[in-house]
Length: 97
Ligand SMILES: [Zn+2]
Image 1 (cartoon, rainbow, N blue to C red):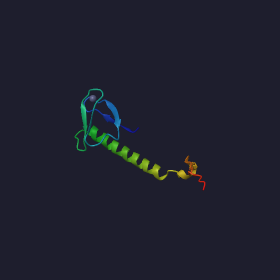
Image 2 (cartoon, helix red, strand yellow):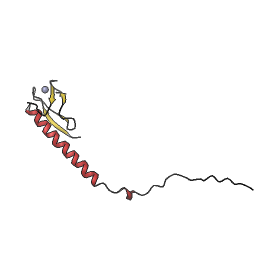
Image 3 (cartoon, protein in one colour):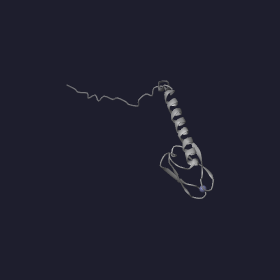
Image 4 (cartoon, rainbow, N blue to C red):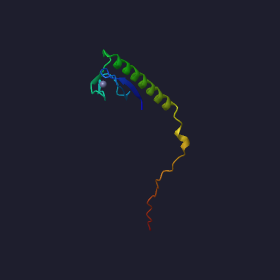
């Protein structure tokens, strides 16, 4: 999927996290030194700010790609009509007078 790189502020390990999750209020542990990194818009950590900026851009691109795909979706009419397997069997009671 869409991942962005994040650099740990303590051990400098670079790891990846899902752009969809990297939003204000999100936190995760570094896989190497297990320090918890908090992702906030007003974070003093330049690595966090950079990661959030990248994540925001990726999310925007995803959103635009999804919108483009939706508007360009081919008509479903060309796929052929399926005959409904519905059989109508009117109950005809033969009545003899
Ligand atoms: Zn670390």
